[in-house]
Image (cartoon, rainbow over all chains, first blue to last red; front, side, top):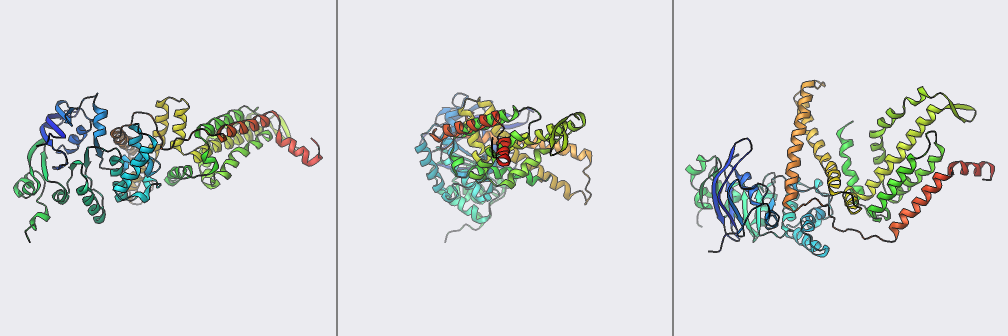
Length: 247
Length: 268
């Protein structure tokens, strides 16, 4: 098996008020793999994601990206390797135009203007939003904002895509497009979501968190089909699996 | 004042993205010229009014060439107007000395200095607004950075501007929810108001934190970079020099009086 792109070893984290958000989490994600992080509200999904690109530093344990341990010194390199799509696109889009927003990351990486331009064009094409180039981001629809937010991250050419609730606030068509896109990406993908139907379509593996602990891990269709497990951790068996039968 | 007047801030961004000869002038050239303009306007003696009028040429010509609609600027001028009024309103009460004559009617120094304050306010604030509308806040900040302004101040300015949208947005939503639950009574009780302001602060701090986190995730290191940094062209120094020459001439000679003399007597 290929060495993991993302590896978390015995990671624990407590918020300043003493709340234990993560307790002894260990996981490994291989290259090109799509893994879902599921769990009830407050299970620790977002906290775990914030460790993956060095916004939070491991209090105990370690996070390794491409074999490099995450420290204050390696944080900048880790952030280039791990592209993070946040839950609220409004937090991510703040430049006057879509093109400038997509260029923000590549410009900070110190690329040449030509290369930045090429990345912007390619990233917008990849999400099918080239026509929005010169529009101000705050005037876009929720679906368009989400697509542009993904483009801002793709433009940085990361190895890993980390997404927090990518399908929230999308209409059915926007959600369908998102699913097709997520399936088509060759990146290693880590997706935290409550949208279990999306998980079935996009992810091969599922990690279940509850109360800051990793409680189950396995193939998506097996784990999500385990009604007792799902209910025990504030989840439910996705409807789509009830009707999944061979034709 | 409704929130719409504030939200109009986004309009400045749209105006700033236009492509006109004025927009193509480098942000640094426009900033230097505008600062010079403000300094010279403020340097006039307190009773001066007529000599200030030729200075309207600067904001007005930028507006005309930069296709900036007067309406959106006037609205913002009105928002700031009370400050200028508050500064000057007491002058007529304290300064009764006759300082000039309009026709045969004597005008007191107080009214004259009050008028002078208002004209200066109109000139400087409209010049600053036109600068933003002709440049766009982001290019303006990048220009300030390239002129050697410390990154801390540039980023502060940029964020102040960016967060304005978010705070007004959050505020508008909270006001709406209060309105919906106040059974048609208009009065916002003091306690509810205090709690609203407190919540607004906490919410905007949380959001600022999330925005900063997202910026950091994309490698933000405190330097403001733009996609197409414009190289200085010959038109940029020409813009600065041309306007500076005009400002100096208008500062040294009262162009309005000279024009008046020329029109009425046919001589200078």
